[in-house]
Length: 261
Image (cartoon, rainbow, N blue to C red; front, side, top):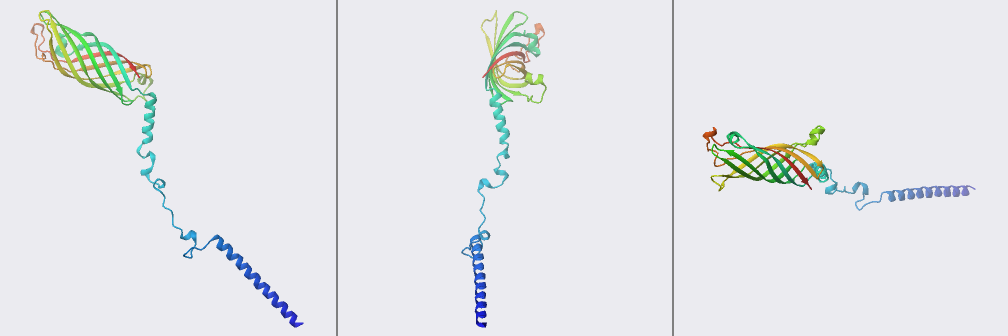
């Protein structure tokens, strides 16, 4: 009877040991599956090197698109393509008078004719090429003289920013203009029908208003300009009519009809 009890106890102990060994084996398998060993014997998560981000994944102000105000430039270009003007041609009629002592001698020219070509760089700056014709007369104390002027030159226009201005100012579209060129003079009279010709360098400066008739198609421009000149007869005197010399420039007031495309 005692022998049977001993055998039963030994079997129970063996079963207990086998159960513990089986539980340890199962636990070891789960750990191995979750964290397989590496060649160095460490954990993969701990030993794996960190990946270096590529150039365009790095966080740097030098790689950001808006760092150099590209968005503002693109917006301005888009607005100009939609609302801006590129080329223009204008015809003008107006009035021209001489200033200074030459103005005491010359009668005003009415009308004066202008023709111009314009090119816009952006909303604020434009370039123009033009030519004008004007006829003056004067009495030198003995006879009448006819003076024909032909001028040509290059100019730049600056249009003011009127976005935040009142509606009338925005509609008038004010601008400044300046340029350089030349003026040729041809003078004739009854006693000397052969023309006396002379040319001089000229600079001009002024301003004006530009009213839209049809946006990006037709405009009406009102412009005032002052032209300098230095003809060869600037030192001539006409004592009979109390004109000591012919210094002075020319003032013009012009109305232009401009066609734009």
